[in-house]
Length: 159
Ligand SMILES: C[S@@+](CC[C@H](N)C(=O)[O-])C[C@H]1O[C@@H](n2cnc3c(N)ncnc32)[C@H](O)[C@@H]1O
Image 1 (cartoon, rainbow, N blue to C red):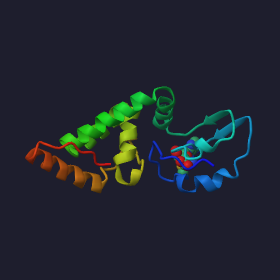
Image 2: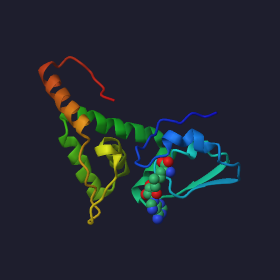
Image 3: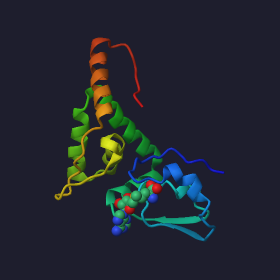
């Protein structure tokens, strides 16, 4: 029996917590179809040699393609942003959010899904991603930056 995997993309409405239970109802077939893939919590349970997934959000699909084709790049790009956030504080989040709103960069998108308030992807009517940095990350990053500026001796990771 496969256990639910940690999710790469944090996604509201994810079926991750019930994925093992739901997987009992997935049948063997030639192709597994996931029309509303979101965070893809059920994909690892597909009992088919081939799977087709879709979603209405283009940056999400671009991110899934990057995870499939260049996973090391995805990990490196996430790590770069996460370390910048720890070094320079919450302003990095807003810089990345601004860049995402100009470019729809899917590496920025991944970073926003994991650090914004409750992992909620929300756009305003001008198609701008609008949520703020999750409060506890913001607070811990501010404290960490202060600490690092005082004693420049430690390496940290927050998550
Ligand atoms: C609740 S989430 C899916 C969660 C996913 N099954 C999981 O377990 O992580 C619903 C998804 O449907 C997508 N969606 C909503 N309307 C859609 C449409 N008309 N066509 C394709 N995707 C759509 C949303 O973007 C969202 O990612």
